[in-house]
Length: 126
Image (cartoon, rainbow, N blue to C red; front, side):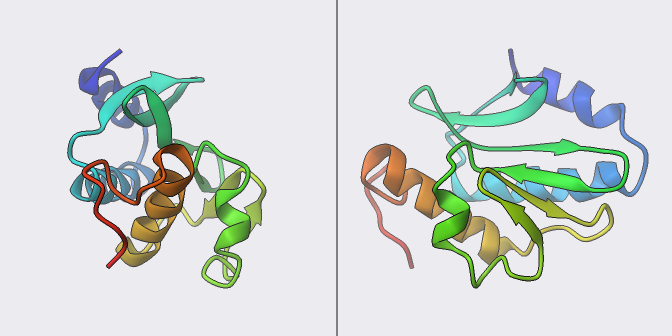
């Protein structure tokens, strides 16, 4: 499982799904550049120290962000209020990338849960 598999997943998508998810991928990697990219449960997933911290997938009429924890989205209820959210997924429009600031918060919460820190190097939220 590798970055090339994520490239192949994205290549199968039509626009604007493809460019929207490419923007999300870029945002995640800017936040945690050391994350390993792979396909897990048939979707692009980003792992740090073997733990899934973020993922995404395309569906017919929406895109989804997966924090790989059912307790991330409830922590950010007010920040995700404009999206359709469930315990373990955040749905967003196919032509509107998630704001980078929101992705930073989603990843930071997951990193705290997984490792007791916001970033792999131990740095905390800004």
